[in-house]
Image 1: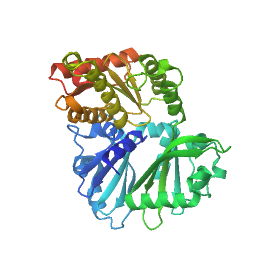
Image 2 (image 1 turned 90 degrees about the vertical axis):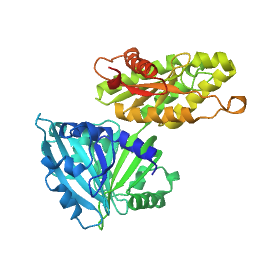
Image 3 (image 1 turned 135 degrees about the vertical axis):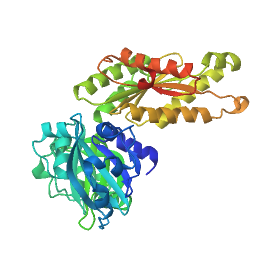
Image 4 (image 1 turned 180 degrees about the vertical axis):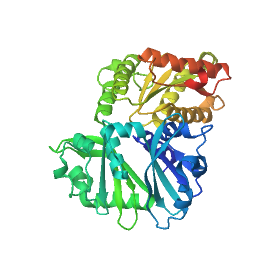
Length: 413
């Protein structure tokens, strides 16, 4: 799995995730994990994981190294409480020799969702009830469903009695390949620790819906897999609204959403994020010294610059993100279910690609860099204008600091 794909997976996850080795060196941690573990970490540094969290997890590192099975659950549901009262629930899974995976959940939220959660499966089930678009369930080595959560019932519109004991293949359209496809998906997860795909899934009445599915291997000899499916129906509907239909919805030059179309979609996403208490981040991408480039090299080159910025934004973004041209040369990228840290990573990828981009023909020596501002939805940013205004503040700080930079809202205050 590429770092970009792993990032997308972690950003989409409704729980905190940390991948680490047996020495506690963190390979990657998603934004939710960093947020939940922040009260326990000085200076924001998670590595070495077991040493940093030693006051709360005790000899967990030693127990992890002494866990000789190739895969399995090392620790389930360890509740840790910080001095300020913040709490988290931590579980540690061995996914391969020398490789571990930590799940981190918000203790108060778990308490509200489930009065008592004493197993990893129960924790995931409790978290699952609090999210809208995700379905979680467990399958065995043959893909037979062992558990069926409330959100799985909601997403697939199928009761537990009609799911447990049957193959997960019933959730896929016939064209997916049936049991052969299920075996391939599980084998990939068994071999790599993870497998993921985008494709259609089925509701009980036979209606297909677009979905992103992740399968994670949990333990060894008695292999089990955690399956997380995200229903992308609403996102696809909004994308289609923004990118198709009347000419007013699509910018003719760059092929991304127009300002009006982007605002309509962003307004809906802001309402959705606030209703379901989900993070939402926006990037504002502004070419550096664009007017000077336009005057020095002509409007045709200026148009090519704008098309290139749009292409880079599309190629680096997920298919669930929304891109719009919101000014003469400004582009906005809306990132649902993404915290500020995830937006900063994406912004840096876009900035770096623009810096390295070589234009063809007579303009091979010309560079078009970008300054990118990143802002996350907070209480005071209740409108599209307010959210973009925060990102614009960050952009101006980036330009004042020398251009060709990424600045997040925290840095801009």
